[in-house]
Image 1 (cartoon, one colour):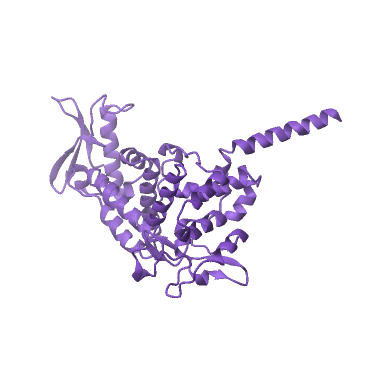
Image 2: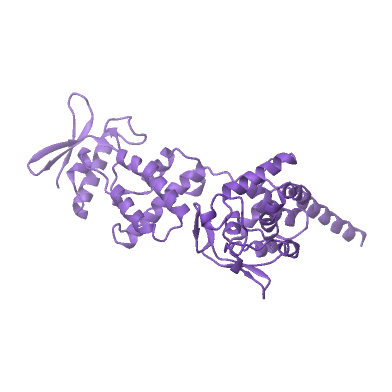
Length: 377
């Protein structure tokens, strides 16, 4: 068979002698390490060179052999494939997801694969683990980069560019620590909303009572309120400041109008020059019918928090707080909260139960009461 393992007589390292098109090549590095004893734990220098020879012969058998790959003169074929895939994928991606994928490819995947020129078919579990460790982002950021690459490789697999999908690193390797949910009791949450200028309060009350995302409230149109059902139809959202005609989950949600918000809604002025349900007359986007912008809402929320001596983000102070109140203060079950929020996964709602000290205390004391009753009987 072609190729042989030899040992350098002077410098005592091993290499593969390989003849290609009349030229003799010496390949002496395995994954960046010189084929010498002590370079790679658990492998001798000879074993490293034998591994190279095995992989080179495998490439020949697979019809993918290129000598440039082993001499360092070959560029990865993944980078151009990533960009080709991305240009096709953005046609169906939300603006926010497209922006995140672009960042992942440009700032993380392309630089890494330029430095480590693996071919698409060579990307396996060990390569992905090495990539994961080199990504300079937090755990969730690392996961986003790997998810982008995974979507690209799924496309390559479906297109028969690769014969099998590689295994990706396990979730625990990302070292993601789920943050403890921060929330406000209802009385303190109400004080923050009341500290917001009255003309801007309706959208915040809507978010409190209906447990939805701010981007969905901003995108809500007048036609999205169904008078017959007395309910809001959530079917669009803002993504990276662009209005998209679908929600984040690509599902339509029908949310009953809360009776407390109904009182507020009846007093809201109607702006016939805007299709939006919540109108910001002081906004800068007059040409876009005065809809609220996320940054504008955040500024209003933070100013209100300062007035009442609170320090909590808008999302935590509204959705997280309202959901946590249902469990901790009102005694609702996780299943009931899941029904109200339309979460697809019960695990997503369970995080509201992770810090419910009052709820846990109530349950523990309830069990004690039952035990006492049984003892008396």
